[in-house]
Image (cartoon, rainbow, N blue to C red):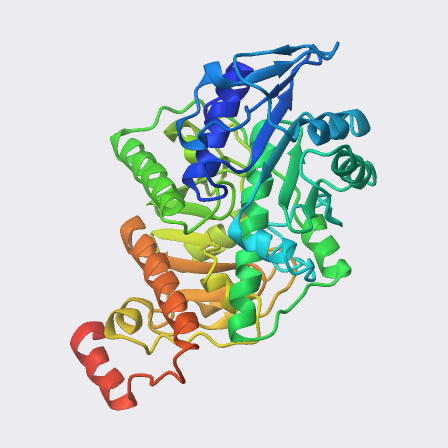
Amino acid sequence: MIDSSKWLPAEQLVEVMTRIYKLRLTTPSGGNISMMDDEGNVWLTPSQIDKGRLQPSDIVKICPDGSIVGKHDPTSEYPFHLGIYNSRPDIKAIVHSHPCALVAFSITNCNTDFRLVPALLKSGNLLGFTSYCIPGSDELAKVVSEGFSKGNDAIIMENHGIITSGANLLSAFQYLENLEALATIYLNCKRIGSPIYLSDEQLLRSNICLPLIQPKNSGTIPDENEQNLRKELVHYMKRAYSRNLSTATSGCWSVRIDKNSYLIVPEGIDANYLETSDIVRIKSDGLQENNILSHYFKLHQSIYNTHSEVNAICCAMPVFLMAFAVSDASFDTRTIPESYIVLQNVPELEFDGFYTNVLEIQKSITNSSPCAIVQNECFLATGSSLFQVFDRVEVAEFTAQSIIDSRLLGPISPISEYAISALKRRYLSD
């Protein structure tokens, strides 16, 4: 895992703003980000500079005495950045942008209850809403600062956009990315059904049930097979991120080494910087690498222990598939031959805490049901290889988007039972 904290402030701002722009979370002229260093200097993106071509030399510094250093003017909205830092000493980074889904909430004053997917709505992150104020004004700085002083870690500004914060720039960015995913999931959900919200008790249980585990370091050097599997795991995790099948920190991938051991991606690793050395090896007699284990550990281990045919597993949260996980709508794979052949039957399982319903999920995995939708949690895919699992996740997301898009045209005409039987005989027979 690359330690971005060792980069200079200007390098960090360029790196994060470039990611925000490439992910279509803002436009070339929209949004601004900042961070505060240990000396109290605030580093900001400049005013009216193309976000797609930003360079470290473009970054502006505001010193504690108020003096400004840089060849450009700071963003015109720097007053609310300074106001937030003054009102919340724990905040060291701020991201403001105009992502499409969150702006939809901004321009409609719509309900912002995102209690849908606990893995994307981390415990302690509160989301607020402020009334409209002129951008760059002292009034905006005042209402935004008051919102953060109440304990909010993010604020949607009426007819404006979103502000997220964090202890560092990456965490503020990751919070933005997860909130935009939640907002997109919510909007997709509303196109096909009614949202299934989690109660405060369910959210609390989700957090309580997930103690992080600190594995032991065995010092074992990976052999060639394991090294190749680590590379494959990193490849597919990064590929899933580049294909919008996950956010930087959501989901989990694993792959079997042999019948007694497997590799799994640890908790909270940013997919953009994932390296083979970050991967955790697990054996039946204990944990083997010195990393923080994923919350999905028990679920993956249970499936490997009971399904010898499964060699790879993914828990993913793509924004179209998750619309089915958080709504009362059903997911039907009988759309085109590829969807049914690759996915077959996809059961939908009820929410029961945060990956605590291991036994039911484990039992749902069969030769004719290699995948499952777990309500308010994830899309689970299993397979004989990482490629097969990746293919299933991507086919499922394409299928979900097609179903959601078809609602504008009329009812779906599923493949007939006769045609399904023919597909089974030709492609799915043992």
